[in-house]
Length: 449
Image (cartoon, rainbow, N blue to C red; front, side, top):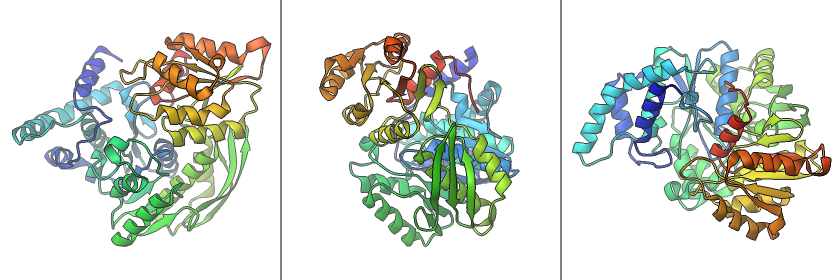
C-alpha cells in the first residue's frame, strides 16, 4: 500500500472493528441520506449466510458482467489490500479510486459522527464507512447493478442501506454467536433480515432444519417470491474434473446442461446454483432462460482467491479461508474428493473468537500431521496455546509441530509433505482468512480480480 492508503486504512481501523456489530442502521442510513442516497441509483442483489457468500457474489457478478451489465461488487474480508472490497466490472478499484471514495464520504461521516456522539452513540463503524464508500464508488462509475455481500448477520448489517431486487441466503451454521445468537434459529433470524417483500429470495438448502424453518416462515410472512434449493432449483449432477467440475443445474427458468465450473468442491456447485438463480431473477424476473454460451463463459472463467485454491504444485499447496467448523468440514470433503495425497499436512492458524477446538477436531481425520502457526492479526491465537490444544485433539505429540513464524511454518509443512522424497504429498492451509491471505502473499501468488 502507498503511504496515503496506509494512512487512510489506519484511520478506518481506528473505528469500531469489523467483527463488532452496532445494532442500529441509523448511522449508515443517515450518511447515505446526506450523500443523496447513491445506493438507490442502481439495482442490487444482497447476499447473506455463514459460508459461501464471497464465492457466490463473485460467480453472480461474473454472470451479470458476461450478460453485458456494468457491475459493482463489494465483499469482505479482503485478502491482501482493502481495495479488494470494492470491485467495478470485476476488477478491484485502484488506490486512487479507493482514496477518492474515502474522501467523498469523509465530510458526511464527520456530520454523522458528531450527531451520533451528541446523542450518546458511537461514530460510524469501520464496516459502515467502507460500505458507504462502496455505494458511492458504484454510483460514480456508474454501475447497472451491485452485488453486495453482508458483513455479519443481516438485520443490522450496514449493507441494509440498499433495497435489493434479489436477496440470496447461503447455508447457515454456527459462527459469531457473540453477536448473532447462540442457536441456529437465532442466527437464521438475523440472516433473514435481508429478506423483503419486494425482493425475490434465493435460498440455499440448509444443513439445519431450524434455519430452514426460520427462512420459510419469514418468506411466508412477507409474501415474497422465493426459489429454494432442492425444491424449485437444484444441482442435478456434477462430476469432478481437472481444475474444476462439470455440472448440470435446474434454475428458476430453465435447465442448464454440461456446464464447466472452474472451482473445486460440491459446495462451489451449490454456490453456482444460487448465483444462476439470482441472475435469472434479476435479468428476467425468473421467467427467462439465461443464454447458454454466456453462462458457460462466466462459469468457466470465474475465480475465488483463498477458497479451495491451489497456489503451488510439487508439493501441492491448497489454501482455504475455512474459519469455522462448517467451512472446515466443507474443506475436508473437497480435499477428499479432488486429491489423492499420500501424505496430507495441515498448516493451521485460528483467530481468538473462533471455535478452535471444533475446527481442529474436524480437520484431524484428514491430516497426517499439522503445523500450528499464527498470522500477523492481533486476534490470532498464540501459537503455543493453539498447539497445546492441537496436541489434545490429535492425541499424538509427534503429529503436531509448533512454528510461530509463518514463513518457517510454510517451509516446515512443505518439508513434511516431501518427507523421504515423497512427490505426492500435499499441504492444506486453513483456519482463518488472514492465514490464507498471508500464505498466499508469501508464496508470491499474484492478485486475482
